[in-house]
Image 1 (cartoon, rainbow, N blue to C red):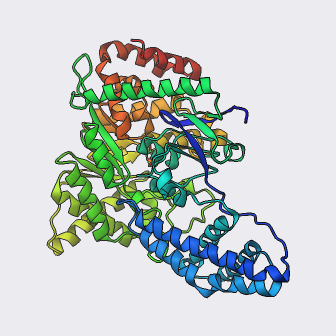
Image 2: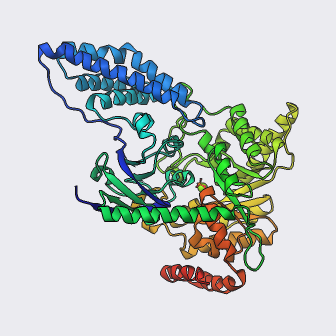
Image 3: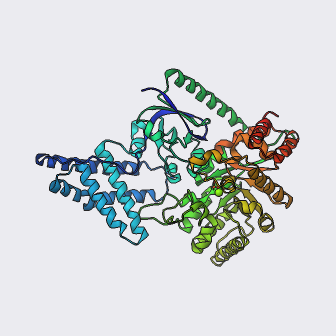
Length: 583
Ligand code: PEP
Ligand code: MG
């Protein structure tokens, strides 16, 4: 096949070279035909064999579940096994083949459609959710019947476990992305998505080359095609010529050598040439990420996105993690960081981070009941999380970070609930740090423009540039159609960031940036020049940022920053920011 190149949005650095593995779209279009009477029993057998194969496949997946897989994944697989054994799936379609002479795929789809229609009638959202389980089980059987292996079974088979697999999909949810941890998996390409969508953020945290917003990559790339992902350029080369392949192999080897060299900076303090100390923290999704954070020499965790403990929980145990389960996870992170502070952000769900127990009905979820708004609307759930975080603070330094605060009454209510959680723990004789620092994410423009509301009542601020840019520019961070307008260097964005750093610093409270801008080496000097002294990013980005800091001199950067802050032309700003790297 001829080689071709696709252009999209770069989201995670590095070069990946491997064979394409297409994740089949959820709905399978099956062939419909009538079979002869004498073929009926053979067709029945074909369906029975497929069901048996899926039973075995589920067992293999169960056995191969990574240690850090969400606790409910096992239960979820059990539910699928139960559905598969139920006569409604294991017998009724066989009767349909016998009675109507449908081919096996058609018979199965007929029954699944029938069941789905029945589930649609059900009021109870929990039971209605089971419709998805039935459809997923049906799809697994159909994939066996039609000869398209499922991603998980393919990836877990022994011969694939050492090969580089490049996943090509229309879309991958952040929760599904997490499931790819620990699997032989070299990179991923999706048709949709933005640079700072949560799926992309998880890819960066897994340190896997990735490109999104590739429009129709999943239609153009065929199963097992050779694929190169250039994660820095956001380019995918399909069926490369031997010369191009060789060139990229060399580039890949060079990047690996550079990375190894960076490893030497692990213990070097992050100090600029003029002697200014900078603190570099890690962003994590799950407690296990602390290993990478420690390996990168992070000063602590600057952002623990606690919502990842709540996501991807389906099946019978479709519920939120209990206070004790959460406490164990938070404590695990605190213990793993060995005395370095762990900043735990309270639940930030909604928009592109749905959780299965919360039905998303808002017309515009990014502007809806997200993050702290949701928590204040669910006080019992919020109190349980606050107690879990507070209890973890008895095991090492913990900071509490609240997402999406905007209004003064939200601050009042949040602080009151933290006091209530503390009182409940005192009553229960449970230990916690009574002086736990409380901080606000500054990620809504209104917050960045009304900082006096925050600086008097908060112990620290953390700028969430991902959302700050989204809301300041009215650009959905996950929508590839408007990705070219998502501009961190827009003068309004720069004003909001620099105003927050200056106001917080003047008030004597620490300010960090924990959005993706903090890990972008092209922006390190800009942020340093704006006065930023705390950065929080994926562990994989930490040493490159440190290298940039070690080579920076604030005295030469400062005058250039003043010029940038006075400019309004985006291309002039971009050029001036590039120039900073030459200083
Ligand atoms: C942000 O908005 O910049 C941020 C760090 O939070 P999240 O990406 O999880 O929304
Ligand atoms: Mg945010």
